[in-house]
Amino acid sequence: MRAPIIQVRDLTRVYHTGSAEVRAVNGITLDIFSGAMTAIVGRSGSGKTTFLNLISGLDQPTSGEVLFDGEALHPMNEAQRLRLRQQKIGFVFQSFGLLPLLTAAENIGVPLRMRQMAAKERDGRVTEALSWVGLLDRAQHRPYELSGGEQQRVAIARALAVRPQVILADEPTGQLDSATGRRILDLLRRLVVEAEITVVVVTHDPQTMEEADVVHELHDGQLIATRHKASRFSTAALN
Ligand code: ADP
Ligand code: MG
Image (cartoon, rainbow, N blue to C red):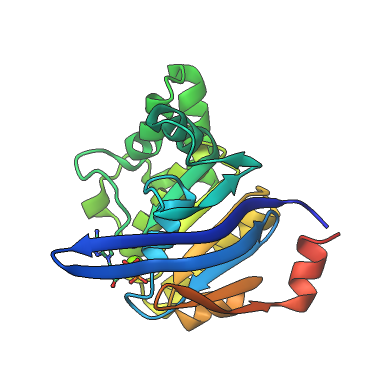
């Protein structure tokens, strides 16, 4: 069996607001394997976004630990965690997160600029990523000139262009109709199979749960069930 790319051990995040205490993530232990699409599901408020922020080192746990590719995240300083995110993780959001004044191509180039990539290599990566999501002809369009589905494809291209090990997606189909959502899921599947990127998707979309190889269900910050899609997971990740 492959080693897990993300190991989560007894992870807890408590928020204090006034006198109230919310255990947004409450003692979660699980492994996320490479070569698979993993879904984190649960009702609104069950702790999904908090969990995603913790496994990418954007947020600090109250207790417990996360190992990313064998490295413990939380002993790292902020600069080390930032570098890990820039090098190994791509993000996709429900609301796409594109900068409105930049073209599709410029948006895809933003994380590459942050990594100080030379212009020539950057342009190559941007073109490759646009082509991969089927939007070469939209390179010079700004977000408001694109449909929701196209904007999400640009966001996926932006995540892909970095060539991360893992893409984390928070409700990526949440603002899309089901046919457009299906197209986005097909792209996420291709990320796993063709680009060999591990995909973790937070969702309450039934279509996305159905597509995932592994589904972890949260309730009130706790992991209450894990389901494996036997056929796909065994061939994609366990061989
Ligand atoms: P989900 O993404 O599943 O909807 P969240 O992770 O956003 O859930 O939230 C889990 C719980 O933690 C909720 O009860 C929410 O109100 C609370 N919470 C989330 N972020 C904060 C915060 N920054 N401060 C206080 N409470 C928070
Ligand atoms: Mg959320």
